[in-house]
Length: 306
Image 1 (cartoon, rainbow, N blue to C red):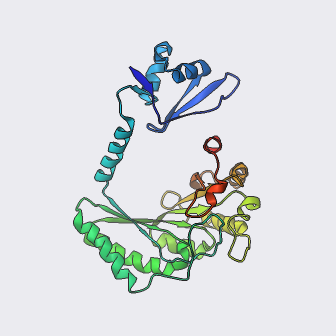
Image 2: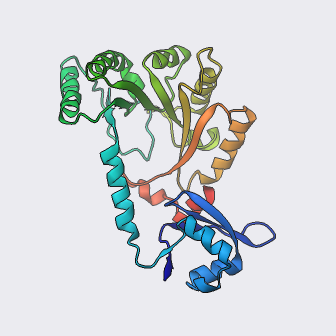
Image 3: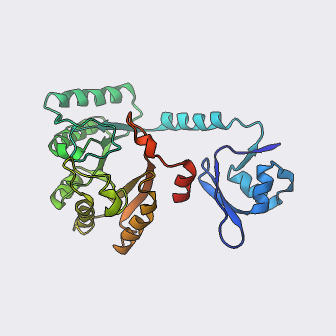
């Protein structure tokens, strides 16, 4: 006896042949099937599904055994992955300050920065984790904000100290940063490379027309052109190497900007950035204790974008 997995997405019809894409979020694979097959699956009439198609759907975990407890299997899988993970991941916020005043942001920015007295506390916490578990072979730091580049000096000081700690415990060291990109000038980009930053994630909420209505400075000034020029400067830098330091573009989407996503993709294409940017992804806006959820996209509209 079989059943349809709960963790699938079925597209709208595609092409003239009236076919559908069915995607398994469990196996991250997809199958293209006919409307007739979709109707059979939704009716749980599995015995009439063509045999080769049935086997493919089963292999992709789109069809599963009826007695299977999917939630437990998925939770056990991730628990085992956590237990087997040999990387200690630590997020550090160098400052609570940010230049932007994005309407959907749930943070309260302040002119607070890490100080000399904070560094030993951070290092002691990391070392406690390393002493508690000998499985760790790697240390990865995520520099996060507000806007972490405003605390770049602290990042440099702590990086050197954490590298020494990594060496003491025979661990490798890597880091990544999530930034609004406003301060990502060529000299700053070079400093990030020197800090062993392996991934730089920058947010663009569409093209200038929509981005500047959402991601503006606290004085209300536009930011898109500055950020996009910074991205291009990074890519044209003599030190740019996508194999060692990846650039990632994140696009926050809601009702006000989701249609402009396509224009942003076209703009990236016009500048031939397909092979330069390692990843482009969408992130739905949701509430962080504010009213951002009022502009949230319906699930079906977000799926259509993806």
